[in-house]
Each structure stands twice: as C-alpha cells, then as structure tokens.
Length: 324
Image (tube, rainbow, N blue to C red):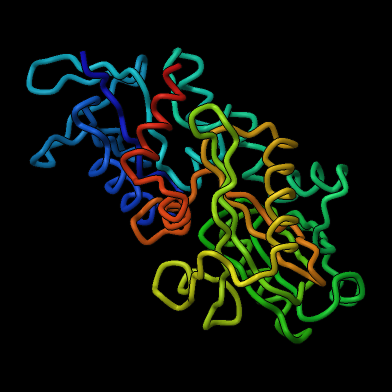
C-alpha cells in the first residue's frame, strides 16, 4: 500500500512565499508510484490540506489528520519544506515527535540549534572551525557604535540571529550606516549578530544523508551582482551560482572535509546547505540552512543533479530515510 506523505509548506516567517514554491516542487516531483503526496499549508491563521482543485480541508491538530470528502486521511511521514518558523527552527518537529509522526528533517533540537546563528557559531568554534569575528545583541541592549566597529571593523554585516533567505541583512560600509542596519535587523528578530567582513570566495556546500551515508555534494561558488548574497541575489537572478566552484583541488578537499565535519559536529541528519568564505584558502563557516531552497533553480538541487541525483531520487531518499 502506498504511504501518505504530507508535504508541509508556508510557515510563519517572511519566507512563506519561498516555502510555498519549494513545497510545490516537492509535491510535483514525489514518486507517485510509491507515495500519495498531499499539499499541506501551515500558516498563521490555518493548517489545511489542499486537494487537486485547491479546496481546503482543516488539519486536526490533535493527531495531524484530516477529513477529505468524507474520508479520514492520516499520514505516514511529513516532508518538511517550511523555511523559517515553525519548520526550520524545530518547533513543529517537536510536535510531530510528540504525536509519533515521522519527518524528513533532523531532530527538533538540531533544527533549533542550527537556526540560531549565534549558538551554532559557539558550538563549531569549540572544534576549531574558523568563523568571522562577531558581536551579539538583544533588542534593548545599549549600543556603542565605537566598540562594535573596534571589534568587527568595517565593512561588517548586521543580520537577524534567527531568520533566513537573507531577510533583514545589511552590509555596513560606514559608521553612519550601522544604526539603520541594526534597526532593520530588529524588524526580523529581537536578537541580532554583527560580523566582520570576510574578503574571499563564497561557496555553498550541500551535505545530505543519502542511502545511509553522509554525502558532500559538489560545491557551488556564489558570485553576487549585489554587495552580498542577499534576497535578490538568491531568488531574483542577481547572482551567478557556479557548480562546481572554481577553486583549487586543495581548497575543494578542505571545504569538503570541513563541511562534513561541521555536519557531524552538529549531529545533523537530512538536508543541509552551509555557506563558507574562503580566506587565504581556509574555509570560514558562516551558517547552516537545514531546510534549504528546493526549487529546480535552488542551489542544493543543482548540486544533487551534478552528483547524479534527480529531484525524484532526492525526495524518495529523504522519505525512505525518515520511514526507516
């Protein structure tokens, strides 16, 4: 009998539209000879299953079931395509654990940890992984522009601590730009991170579990037309994403080893895509995305394709690893 798969998408953050696109791609490419996929929108005002005509049927939050045209539907597995809260920060995954429903993501604690940029950096630094110099602020903290700039220098980056898709991030080139950048970041999150500028080649590395093994996918070089890899660069074509990256064999080997090491340090499973800056051939870890974009144009599917893994194979593997 075919398994029922709930593809959850949407979420409660600024990334809702990106997530809906990713979720639709998953829904379109799931192997329907093996599974019955269902589109499930998890939104602030409603949790609903959509049928082929986009009619909506409410989710029973006690057991994550639904009644569609008089028939009760229960799910064997959830495919998590929610960027940001509550999918990428682990919240809804803790709920699935409580009701005994399997899902394609890492355990909720790992998701919560990696969604918090400060805490992730704190962990990987203990293992000798190079990172940018950083300062952490809570909303309401006293701000000394001079102290911040003395520590991280200029230019620097100001970013929300818990957000994705580059929402709320600014590159600060002059002191007078610092406070507006901080205010922008606080619109996304009450915790922010200010990091030193790393001058080097930016690369993105997908690490996944595939057929029981940890697999480092081909590395992508990011060349942004904008000042940095912002929302426009990520989603509106304002960047070149070159796979495989134009780096030396030695650099490639170092990046691959580091990316796999970070994945293991953080006890990850499922999908991940991490960003690094190569400074003097040494990869500096920026952050990890545990629900990376999975449209046809997104980086991780591009990397999987170069590795010889189709979207259907990628999604089938994620479901099978969750079910086993």
